[in-house]
Length: 204
Image (cartoon, rainbow, N blue to C red; front, side):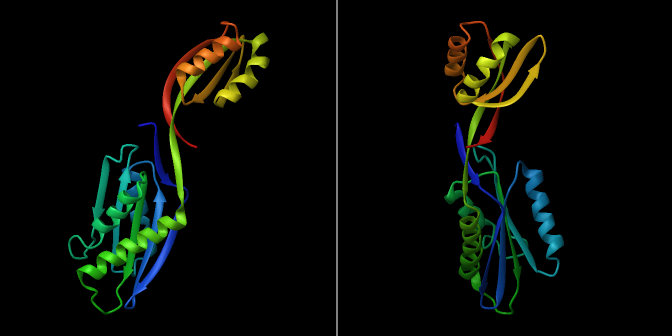
């Protein structure tokens, strides 16, 4: 998998159902610890609310999925929230829905709809960002070649660092390392060396 989708930004949405208020927030996170920090923050900020239900999906392969009903009847809050995240195909996202009880029971169906709808509206507000797997390449070139090579490297990928010394070392993020190596060899007539030093995910 070379791409996945996440939210473009944090966002909130609020709905009211029979005087119960549902405030949803969706936030982009890097890992489970970050997701749990967002949940804890919602509890602190809205300590007067009865429920802070949550769901999150983590990882480019969406392998880590968790949900919590936080006192609502089992399966009526966290699960429908998680289902919305899954159906939208986003990852590295946590959703928290804070509920202030309005005095009228909504029933299982009403709760499922309310929690799912709140998350859906927050996701609509957040928008979608595609992320792409980037290969980190190190290009070492003689100082006399660096000037002419710099422009070519920037057309082939994202230059994230340049170190100057006896040689010049460029760090470049690219999507196709084999093609990149071929292009650098051609541009430098074989004088520059190319090494792959890792991978990372970047926004497109």
